[in-house]
Length: 167
Image (tube, rainbow, N blue to C red):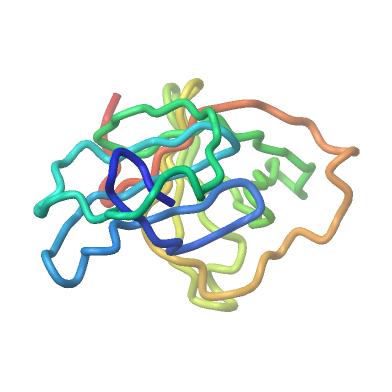
């Protein structure tokens, strides 16, 4: 991908989004990252540590009309699903299931349902308008195998973070 003369390579792709990094991340320790969802691209708000890298001809490339957003943290509106659990609801995000751990007046804390079986450390902090996901990877495959049509849904902003912040 080329934006404003800078080249990016694909880092990770999922069903809903893809993340990209500058092709000069090793050579010049460039920290610029992109998160692409459909025709919207979020650029992590930091400067390139090098000159523009694309020297070719733009006429030979495919071009798309996109929306660019500069941000300090990647955020996106996700569709979150809820299933009935034995005692509390089960939250499903991107095929992974989370169970309610602590419910407070303003926010609730959730953990992956595979925290014991697979030692999965992924945690969520949820408020009425935002879900924060602690930045670590699941240690297992996606767990939800059911039908999404039968579930309750909610569109909410999700933010990946290293540390939960209070709102």
